[in-house]
Length: 140
Image 1 (tube, rainbow, N blue to C red):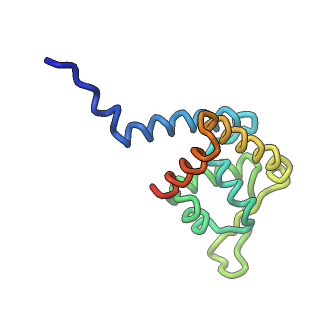
Image 2 (image 1 turned 30 degrees about the vertical axis):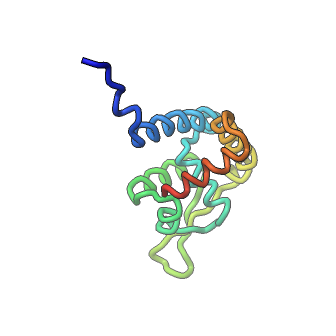
């Protein structure tokens, strides 16, 4: 019987999953100093960009299901990164805000994100980086 190349090695699901594992590990290692996971970092950066989002808006923006986001928010609140206030528009909703701790660290966290992005994409030239990001956005 002739040697067959493994089908999974050409499967886009496998390739994307393996790439994700490596990328996640890179971000996780850069964020461990702050006690943050990559998902928690995304929430903090989203709140940095638009303070006062409610959980539903944040869930939509980051494509996270409510249960996952709820756990992330609980851990961020417990660790002192965010706080909640009732919405003035709808008292059933809570707005999410960064604490002073988050404000104090976000500059260096953003630098770590840039370094992680560069580390992940270091094998690519400038045009390849732009094309790769565009292709990933197109796959969404």
